[in-house]
Length: 405
Image 1: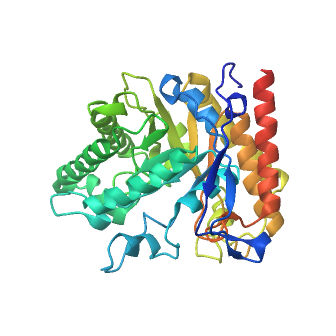
Image 2: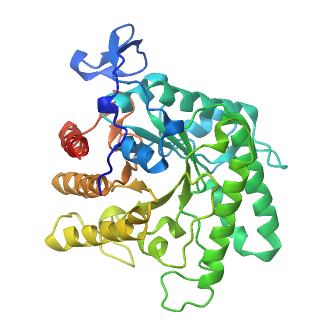
Image 3: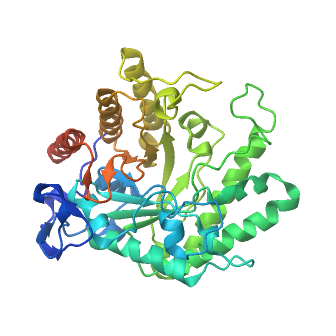
């Protein structure tokens, strides 16, 4: 499925920038702060994202990672302003150096999940200081040579209201107001910034239980997601600046592979034809989600049997047949597993297997990461350098194959 003419950072003229980094410790220097030491940034001249097709852009992203449990942190009564939410789930304050570290560790795209309701007036006006702070981090990522994906995340769970007739209009008004403000705030950012319509909340079991064989209400549930995704495209395309040509990421149903590959799922119409589809990959959930046994499953410490490999191949092939082969790019917006009660070798095998399978099919894999899980936000390095090397070998092999195509 490799495409000729793919825009690869490796074939662009590299620009070496020198950055004075602070805020990250250097383990090679006894754990001391980098301070005024000069480190070379590995950012390169970004491709002309405006002239790229969305398929080319997704292919060029390479490996991705999430800035998880940070701006999407919710809950509690936090009185300390923006930084209180940012740090409430264990993250240190985000710095330019922390963001640049993602690029230096080999990632090409940063997904920034955000709970915009954290700081919002009753009329859905987002506090200016919250917009400014998120914008600052987005700019740091773009400056580092990263693509960026920005979304509305779970955000306290107000999405359930779309399924209730008495609440639907208010939910759509809130959704519209959020995206109108984001389009205005980020309108002058170029097309390396991608907007994502929503996270994985685009499913409503109160209308149709996607775990059931009963299809009653299924068409209504899928129709509701189509309505929201269509509104998203209309809002962005109707805004000024670069929004008219911005690449957009459309959330699949539950961002589940099977549900999104279902014929009932429809991509919204886009006059610019610049939309990709988003799914998440946490399969099998007993390995990817459970740390302890639950009433619905027994936690698995390992992954990598022939059956596991076959399941991964089948799921990735579904995405290829349903979307990529039809010209619709795919971003796996989240995948990964916890570290607790998991075998280190299995963690490496799962993460690399998903990354390889995605890249081989021209999809972009975006690792779900929280503080200290895969990336150390204090040292600004991967916590497992062996895994880093394995991922880079996979990416290099994929780029080599593309160059030969």
